[in-house]
Image (tube, rainbow, N blue to C red; front, side, top):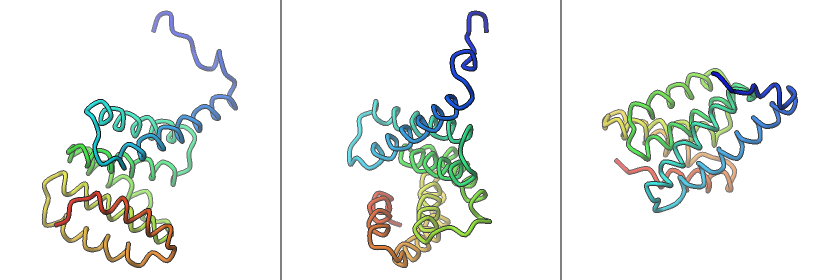
Length: 162
């Protein structure tokens, strides 16, 4: 692109990595915070979706496979809230695929199922939604840590019930 300046000309590799990580974390936190609001404006909805995608972009540059998978979980979560079923399903499947071979903590297994259920809801796949929702509820109830369980429940309670 004519007139563009490479980021490499402005920042060295370490600075670029630090910048990507900072932006990934900030965008992640913003998207989660907006998703937890009981009411959002259309502008906040757009900001939430943009922040989730930005977080995924930046984690793809510097994150571990787990970071990238969790970023896709956030994209699925936000997309489901906004009724973007196809996008929510694609991101949920990507998240599950990346984390399927890992030994994930109990809270993360519950989140994966809850957000996968929500994606099915957004896609209008009610039979799958009901089955996965029940599994998410079961996994959520089995979370050992009280604080982790409360965080899960706060998110899970935002998902419509079958």
